[in-house]
Length: 428
Image (tube, rainbow, N blue to C red; front, top):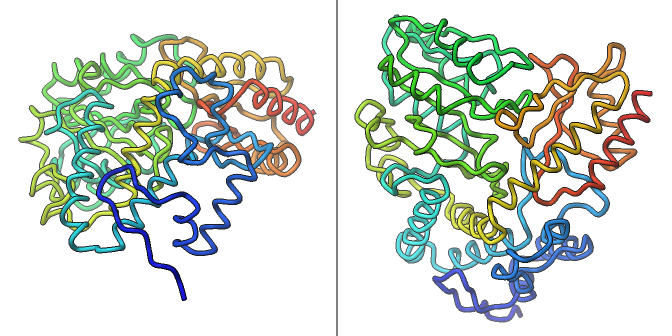
């Protein structure tokens, strides 16, 4: 006979232990927990958020469940959850299932709204301007749908946009006659002024929106969003930002950026549960951007948005707590310092070309390289993982035969050394 389940609690600090939690959730999850311990992770009970601010950043990795001896450098695709975040998310899920209706439409609504409040503070906006979504793509789709563009309206974007931020415009081009104009971004631009001028020249009297990535997924180029916001405002059009590669790795203040909308995926750099995202729509822009899903307001639950993935949204709150406890300024500084080391090391490897900028004001914790002809990037990436224990991103599109590397708070200088040693061995 199974023992009684622990009493559910409605606050983040559940009283039952990690051992009890894993037992209740079954052998599969229990095995996951043991796997995490084998990899040297710190359990939720051992994670002291108050101590993280003083913990050396080189030791932060122990809070993650990454495979032992794995240099995970593809955070730009999916970030790993800290053990603390995963375990607190699992606790919330266990609590919810004890009484789904009473808790799901009661205390958990309040908890999710508190997460939305934290998210607003995380991006530097007002509570009334923040919505929780499942990812950047959903957020971008909501913005495009809410703008109600008409035949002949123009959207100005770039040739470096991710499909998740571009498909929404292609949809309306195909079905409503919206016209898409593209700025061809140089791989290595000379500066922000050069980029802004490219957009200025590409604009027309019918340009209704400028849609750009804050940080391009291809080369990690940080676009001058603040200047582009001013350009858009001066021309009476809307600036839409795909921020999938920004928050969590970089400190982002949407009010300072001045954009009308900002979409991001929390499961990348924010290290949140998979399937969580954020959407900011500036209060002044809300009258002209009215997504169907937000017709009932920006609340986490409404008749327009429907039932949510409650545990992961609650987990998003714990992910922000984790990042805030370490210090977002410290995280950005650490990630960019590693990026500088990586940039210099990659430049010394013969046969490859670094296609990311060196300038700090346009750089990010993403660095990309183009491999020499005759060397397949997919084969090199596979060898890096199987032989050297390094995970990177395979690139195509504007970066021909490329690889992309991400540096985050759990990475170390040893990760970079291992990557570069592996690259030399596979290319040389």
